[in-house]
Length: 289
Ligand SMILES: Nc1nc2c(ncn2[C@@H]2O[C@H](COP(=O)(O)OP(=O)(O)OP(=O)(O)O)[C@@H](O)[C@H]2O)c(=O)[nH]1
Ligand SMILES: [Mg+2]
Image (cartoon, rainbow, N blue to C red; front, side, top):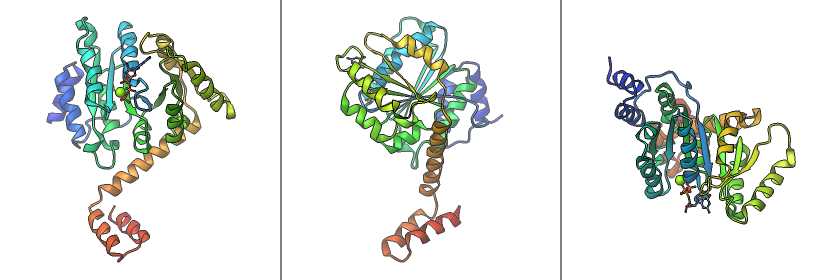
C-alpha cells in the first residue's frame, strides 16, 4: 500500500492527523487517491468583513448540536488573526465531543500559481470520503480570482453586509449571479433591513423560480441562523448558475494550463522582444499541451 492509501485508510477511520497529512500531500500536488467529484461542498463568499467567519462559526454550532460534522476550507483567510480566531474558538469549545465534529483548514492561493483548481476538488472529495457531513469553502469574494475559487463549490451562499458599499462590491465582482442563496448579515444593525430590500429589488428584475432567496441573519445574536441552516438543505441551483460555475471552472483550468506551461518563460521572452504576436504565443502554448 502506498503512503497515500495508508493515510486515507487511517483518515477514514477518523484519524485527524492522517487527514491533515493527506490534505497537505494533495495540496502539494500529489495525485488524489480518489475518483473526482464524489464530494459536494458549499461555497461561502462575500465582501471583506461582512461576517463570513462569524456566521460560519454560528452555523457550525447549530450543525454540531444536531450531530452533524463540519469541515471548513478557509481560502486566504484575510488576516491570519481572523482565520486563526475561528480556529481558536473551535478549539476552545468546552464539549470535547463537539470539537471532534469540526475540522478547519486554511489554504493560501499564493502557493498555487494558476489557482487552487488542482487541489480544491480533491480536498473536498477526501473530506467527503472521510465522512464529513458538511464541507464549506470560505473565500473573500472581492474579485475575479475569488469567484474562480468559489465556482468549484456545488452551492454558493453569498454573505453581504448592510453597507451599500459591500453590496455594490458583491455586484461588481459578479457574485450575485452565482449565488444560490443570499444572506444579509448584521441584521442587528439599523441599515440591514434596507440593504435586504435593495438586494431583493435588484434580483426581482428577472424573477422566476430560480431567483435566490434573501435572508437576514445576525452572526452576533444568532438571529436567523437556524432558518438559514434549514433553508440550505433545500436550496437548489439553476441551469444558468450551473453554466456560469462550469464556465468559471473551465477558465480556471485554462489559466492553470497556461501558467504551468513549460513554454511560458520562452513565450514571454519572445513576446517582450516582439518576435512573435500574441496569437502566435497562444498557438505555441497550445501546441505544447
Ligand atoms: N454588528 C454585527 N457585527 C458583526 C456580525 N457578524 C460579524 N460582525 C463583525 O464584523 C467583523 C468581521 O467579521 P468576520 O467574521 O471576521 O468577517 P469576514 O467576512 O469573515 O471577514 P474577512 O474574512 O476578513 O473577509 C467583526 O468585527 C465581527 O465582530 C453581526 O451579525 N453583527
Ligand atoms: Mg473570514
